[in-house]
Image (cartoon, rainbow, N blue to C red; front, side):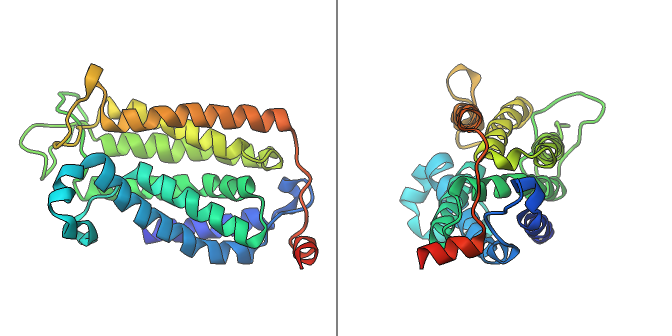
Length: 255
């Protein structure tokens, strides 16, 4: 997790400094990235925990409210962390006068790094394993019983991490940052697709199981991401390229 945070910070600083990919003027400076990383980390932790409590085990935590704060027992939700991070980034961008969608675009490019390393950690720690299967590459996980299972953590790492990162990196290099919200929309929609596909191989949470129509909670929470993501892409395309103000000029105008 720490390695993912450091790698994301390094790449985000490089993106902020690469004026050519912003159309000649970057709306932020590397020092903004140094500061926002703390906000993002808080958003991940607070949002991830809140999401898990509300989405995955509300009855248990309603009966044991003190357990909400026992983070070392595990229990984090990506979708909750996603919402918490967005809120943190929007608040930070507003406080600095940075275009909010551009702040989210930068975060979108680097997030798959953390997702990939996080899924590798899930695999090593025998967490969030897949459904029982007889495929040749199945694993018997220490905490997953005697039956071989899909290594769904590896599937998720490949889709959410490697594939999505490659797409976003390509878009960045092609100048997509000039269209605020475009890269963010691709990330949100792309993650939704990757997560829904992965859920077909991942064992549902035991306290929830399968929902109506064989859906899982992960699928249900990812469907809105498809709608929001593709909507953001369409809006960014219709608005066209933006003309950004340099951070120094932005500060002078607000003074």
